Image (cartoon, rainbow, N blue to C red; front, side, top):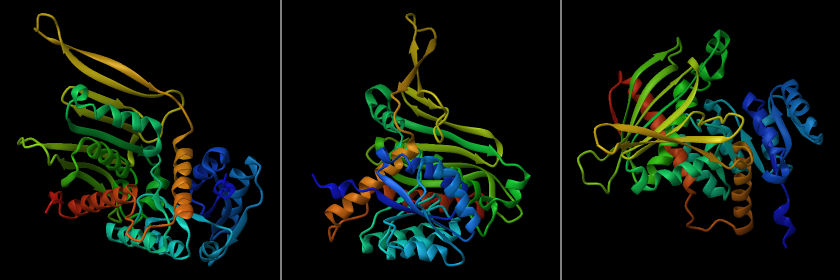
Length: 382
């Protein structure tokens, strides 16, 4: 047995953002993730040490290298202590530091939205290929075992029918401090606002669904209603994305995603996938609630005398396993080690997840363009 392949992937954390805490806790489940946090970099030594003390020492690990000061990020990226870098920095900084990490032969897991534009992310993908390193985004729910069960179910066209609509919402109510000071509401931080932060999840789920059922082409996008803050950053948006079934010759051969994302409404993270025979509903598709991992199926059946119909419902309980963030790091380790153990073929293309991430960013960019145009359709199939 090759014991080298069982060495943990050594992770460096670039920045001490709040989302880093959740990921550090996930990484620390070494027996599943096969990863280990070895370094944290922050411009603030206090923030870096707080992350180390609160979220790492409690797990029994204290041998964490702290890089602090104005050149902290650069020193961590160049360190031989680190195999891979987790980057939860503001969107406006991601291109610079993702490219720097890849150029220093580090694998990268970058938070979403992945870049200020799809063009920036395409540059990152090219750098990953050039440097023979793995690049992945931090969308956790795609690694959840429930997601696979859902995709497998909707692919049963004889039972579920053809998927025609996807309705979703991801919202939470930010307080005054959040709306005024959080990086997600600042043009110099995350310029896509709620569209990139929350809408990303709605778009990504729709992409997974549409690709599973064969609606592979993105036809158009439109933002039908929105609210901007004083900096021009979206804090509320209602959006439409139209996917197209190429193989179906009928006039109505589209699958339409309709979603609402907002920093102004109570927490909602619901998704409904509608087929011609069944519909499927998830009440917590982004951040699963504690307890059983569930989704609900609805179907309509005619009564014996065909005078009216009744709806039947079925709750599907998916067997539980490691948390989705733990599975994300496990999968990241697997892909990184595969490249290190087997190399990168000369003509090898980026993996499908990198391409889907780029496509998600294309859709986010187009939605922002729709807002800029006053809510006009933005065509993506031309």
